[in-house]
Structure formats: structure tokens, C-alpha cells
Image: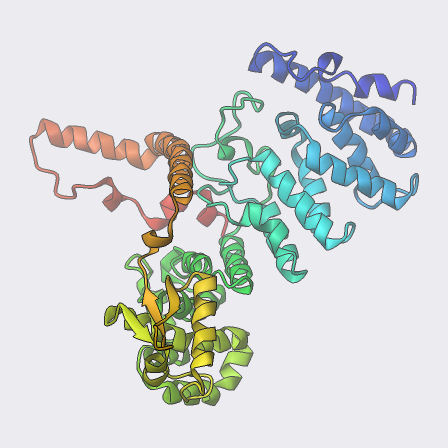
Length: 490
């Protein structure tokens, strides 16, 4: 115990995270400390386990993060040690995940990944705590949240399976633009360099994430879509499913996950857009053909959804109950039936600026019953729910004669000065974040072999004064090249 503590407390110097002058000195000290920790773990592993709980009391997870990780790893991997009460070890685990110094823990490599995996397994911590702790840890390591890792998959699965979606949203709602194994990123010169983009320091080479297969990428977005469905956030669910539907594959192949996502995408499209939308133009031709074959019951529902024949829609849905059940889409189908009349109400805005509730009752029908609503009060409740959910922008008012009517409003009418200023600030912040992503992507593109070949070709073309028939570099790059290492791991 007496000889372990001084070594563990030696980094950073004097317990000061700001004691390093530059990246080179930080890297040098970190590597020296890692070598010392490696010897401790090899030569005094038993002592680390026996004295682990006391050592953790002397270490600050926010300052002595590498040492704290080393001790914690010995107490948790491959199983919880018996040298301390289970709750004590798990409390220290949560404390570490919430407070560790991200710069230091880049050097934790596979040890940090092991801790993330143990947390995401759901075997140690209550689901609510595990999801929140893992989500916080993921964003401590990568504050931008733009790189997909194996920890994201674990988080999504655990959050969805245990219905702890709220705690995972801080990670799930981030836009993924980078993937492990992307081309042109090797081991960085200084792992501690805080200006590095996420794919430069989080990779299989650095040990901070595992192998990411194409199926894992699609599974992540499929689960994200289902998480948004459970929250009735249809637009976000639509975007998540669309990422799976349009996923680039080798030789035009289409996976079961893609077909499953397409079926949900069609239904969620009805909920978010009120109509059937064709797959984007960049969807693979083979995939589009298979979607048409396997998704026929779903596209049939979508065709009926935009008609005024509520009874036909209801009948078709009832006829294919077994299909919805086998596909796990019964809940979404019920949401579609409930949304049918709402979209008919929204359609009235194309004709009226103001309309009485009795006229709405006469002109719209419920697909849940195949009939018109019984009372104007039922129509009022339907519209109020639409207004509350944000689906409809309007107000319900009464004339002097007691007639209740709906007035449609433009979205900007209800936007206060404060809300408008906040929207502008959010947009500015978003643009700032996109600028950083654009800069990283531009640097990566500029060093890719495809781009260099393109530049050389264009220089030769310019020398001959020949016109550029392609007009775009995009014409020379396959979908799989753009995905970099993601596809290569398939």
C-alpha cells in the first residue's frame, strides 16, 4: 500500500492538470506514468485488488484519472473483486464515469473501453444509472458526439430495452458524421492534442472503440428510430430510419435490417409527413426494388392514407393484422389509424382560414372507427391535442352566436420575440459546430488518394485545355469509398 500510492499519485505533477507546457511534455509524462502503471499491474496485481478501495479514496477521478482507471479496472474486470463491498466499488465506477479527465483517459485505451463495456452490459448498475453514466462518459471522451463507437451501440440497446430513453438522449440526438476506421487517420503524433478531431484519437488503433461493422451502424440507427417512435418524435424517427434505408452496401446487397427499417420508415413517414415518400434518389437500385416487394402491405396502407376513404384504410389494416404483429409494427399501425383524421384536418387549411367544428366533423372521418366523430366536443378534443403536440398551429374560438370554430395560424404568428431570438442563437451555434465538422472533413478529403488522383487528372486536363466533362469530383468516388473503414470492416 505504501509503495503503491506514491506511484499512482505521481501523475499529473503535483496534482495540477495545467502543469504541462505543451503537448510534447504532456505526452512524455503520460507515457512514463503508463509504463509505471503497467509494471504495477503486472507485479503487484494482488496488492492492487486487496488495497484497491483504499487507493481509490486517495485518488481524485477528475485529476488522477489514469491511476483511478487502473485501480478500478483491477476491481471490476473480469469480475467484481471481493475485497470491498459491491456497492462501494460501483459507486466509485459511477463517480469515475461522471468526472474523469478526458485528455488523460485517451491514454487509458482498451482499459477505458473495458469500463465502458462493463457499464453498458447492464450487469453491474441499475439501468437508469448505467444509461446516464455511460451517456455522460461517451460525451466526456468526445464532447462533439459526432463519432459512432461500440459504446453508442451498447447505450442505445440498454436504453431502449429498459425504457431509459430520456437519459440517453444527450448522445442519441447527436448527428453522427464519423466512423471508426475512416481512411487517412492513423495514430496521431500527440494523443493528448485537444485540437484533434474525434476520429483521430478514437479508433481501433487507440483502443478507445471496437470494430464497427456495417450491420452495427445500421442497427444503431434502427434502434434510434424506435426510441424516437416511443417518444412520438416522428420526424426524428423518420430521419433515423432513412439512414438505414439508404445505407450503401456492397454489390447492391440489401440486409434484413434495411427491409425492417423501410417498413417502419413508410409508417413513420405517414405520421410525420402525411403521405408516402419515395426512397431518396441515392438509395441503391437493388434495395429500392426489394423494398417494393417486401413492403407491399405498407405501401398499400400509405396509398389509402391519402384518400378520403377511412373505412377502406381501416379494413386493409384489419386484414393484415398478422403482418403487423410479425413485423413488430402493430403499435405504429395504430398510430397511423389515429393520425388519419388529424391529417385530414390539416388538409382543410389549404381551403379554409377559419372553419367551424361542426363542418370539420362532417368533412373528416376517423380511421379507427371508419365513421365521423359523434359530437363537436370530440372534434374539439382532437384539435386541442393536435395544438398541444405542435402538429397544428391554430386557435379554437367562439362566435357571438356560440358557434365554435378553428382558426388556422402561420407558425410565425405564435413565435414570441424571445423564442425568435433563441431560434437564431440555436442556428448560430449549429452553424459553428458544422464549421468544425466541415473543416475536418475537408482535411480528410484533401489527403485521400482518390482526391489526389482527381487533382492530378485535372491538372493534366488543364494543360491540354480540355473541358471537364464530369464537372464534379463526386463522379469518381463510390459510396463505399466515402464510408471509408466502415464498409471495409464488413
